[in-house]
Length: 384
Ligand SMILES: NC(=O)c1ccc[n+]([C@@H]2O[C@H](COP(=O)([O-])OP(=O)(O)OC[C@H]3O[C@@H](n4cnc5c(N)ncnc54)[C@H](O)[C@@H]3O)[C@@H](O)[C@H]2O)c1
Ligand SMILES: [Zn+2]
Image (cartoon, rainbow, N blue to C red):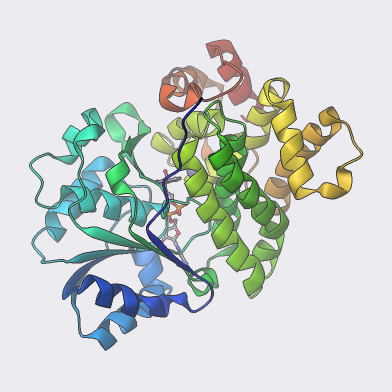
């Protein structure tokens, strides 16, 4: 009998206003000092204040590390870890998107450790949690608040790499929709489609299990049905709540299953051309699923049954096509770029992309339909 698992953060608070649960966490952990990871975008949007106001009320001593770059290189994270290490901290808070949360997760296993980030890039198995973490996502996409992964760019390889270790599983999560109320529409769209890619890829992955499927299906229902409303109306807090939940479920699904060729082929686009993670996934998403359809028609139809039960009378083939068509429609109607032309990528870049994409074996092995280098080339060609 197969054994399977998902990993879930020990304690999750959700709902508008749940930021006030910071008090319960600090008291439970008896924390006297804390480190807060964030970035300038979040600080300028006034969102950091929502956390620091809570910490001020509690009289806890904290330091804010706020100069993290979006989609950081491992060298950026090394710098942040070094600078932050001087400060005492009983608890780590990350308030931000995947970039901030991943840096904080790495810090939680690196502070005072006798291994370095470079060591973890070579052998992530040595990582051990040293300080507990509290994740407060401010985008509705990565699900990084639920995963054991931290993704960094590797400039010398012009790509990105995931460091995966169970000890990076966050301890506390706060899913407060107020954090994404003023999230710029373009980021709602791109991060929302990233979350959609997580659930669809996890459900159609070779590694999918009944446990990961439960989260992937629940996430798919929430995201497919709410992404457009969350994009169109910033004050639709019900849709925003559901997007945060859906993204979180996507993260849990990743811990038990894994993403596939969409994310694999997306990494070189982020690593070399600095296309935001959600955007590069969105550009590839429908094309990769179209390529995959013959190998996961049933799973795509099951996703359709869950999200669009009104299509129950249709055939498996029709339902699987419908889901892919919906993905393309969501990308188009939320105004995410649908090809690589505006990023200056041309046919001359194809050789690099094919080579770098085919090296993402950690994720490509999860894809139900095997991709040859020619297949990879054909997919990139479609989005030029
Ligand atoms: N660890 C994981 O499991 C996992 C999964 C998927 C992706 N990732 C990684 O996460 C990173 C992408 O994260 P992301 O898509 O959440 O974006 P991000 O963290 O890179 O943030 C994108 C931009 O949005 C701004 N921003 C964030 N929240 C805001 C808000 N509420 N209001 C205004 N501006 C705001 C930030 O300042 C930043 O400039 C990538 O490096 C990707 O590889 C990690
Ligand atoms: Zn992703």
